Length: 319
Image (cartoon, rainbow, N blue to C red; front, side, top):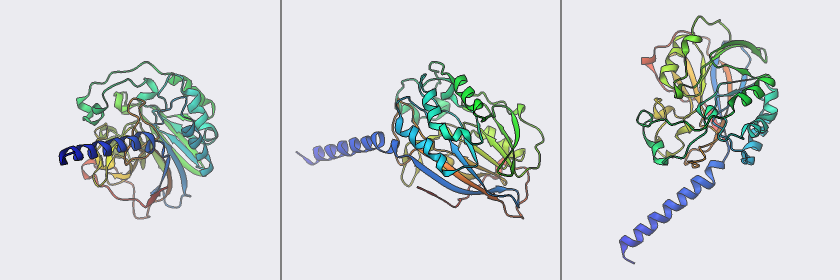
């Protein structure tokens, strides 16, 4: 065999091994990402928030269901679910089993596109194209109303275009959420307006589109939680996410960052994939455990200017 033949054979073998790892191992490497975020009013007690997103659950994904249910052992004060729970028309019971014990804890949620519509077969290469260049075609409707009813029955609050004020572990929270910006169902005007001066002002959305992050920051929210990006799903070591599947820049595809001079944001890389693109590389599926602590006394609240976006690292670890 000549040198070219050997090189092609080696390249093919490496590609096959990488694909096997991405499809067979990493996409089931359930990971907990932890971070400490200074967003509470001075003097507030710390708050542990479990952020779940993008389960894309299939009925037969037993290990994912067991792992999510076991997150209850972390004893979070609040659970926030930012959507895309479903990937199959019969997946609602599987999602409810996965959330199981967590549904007994305080929780809030919004939905994403894959709660409303099933995924469709498509060329996986389309995922690497900018979202503006892809034509969105919906799959069959999914039973999101059944999932919503199950969550509400257990006490979780639906934040879709509503504002809620509640208390968790002695910390008063004002929260508001949007329907999925990826489907252009967001209507920020329905939640716009003066917000109370409470220890935590929380925004919740599925897709972290800048057009919705800007008004959250301008109105004085302390923290926004989102998903949708899958952390890029395919990341290149030393480069990061290839795409975000939205207008968010690649550097913020997962984890905690600042948006403007005041607001913080956490983008979850999520726990699933489309059944038609079941691979992850350098981006394991994750849930986020955020420990919210008081911000420095001299860090006052003020409306943000989206043109002054800066990104700061936050102490934390992945396990």
